[in-house]
Figure 1 (cartoon, helix red, strand yellow):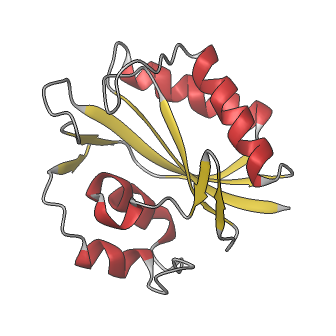
Figure 2 (cartoon, rainbow, N blue to C red):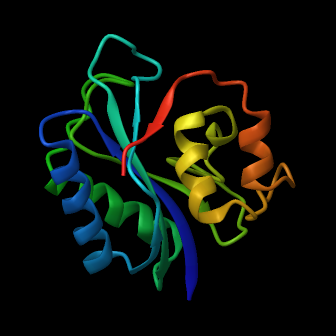
Figure 3 (cartoon, rainbow, N blue to C red):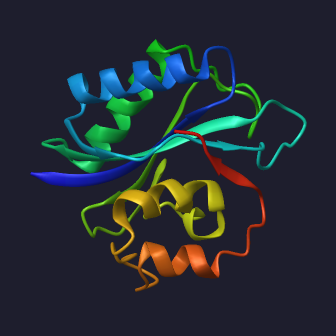
Length: 160
């Protein structure tokens, strides 16, 4: 059985409803959700002139390999209404694979660990809630330590 950490988020429409739909589809199509963080609200990152995001970290057990998980996640996003029109633009749902076991993957369309997770507070705060002692397989630091060292100053507010 494989273990993956995902970040789900969105900033369009019924944000909580879209996250709920994503959790349901992930549990049906990807694997069992073992743990989930609280919801966190964050100002938009990368393209700031848009509504705030809600984000949540998930830990899942899956029989899928990393490529199969990515394919399934892309299908889940599409089903929930994700349109890839503007990089860093508004979206109903975004699902990122942050970590997959302790694997290092660098292929077309898939890089694990997520290459920017250590520089994004909106990723590290929810992930730290559920996996503070998990060691980043490249940086060899815990998620908690990465959060303490994170250069990102964007406000991230726990809402539930």
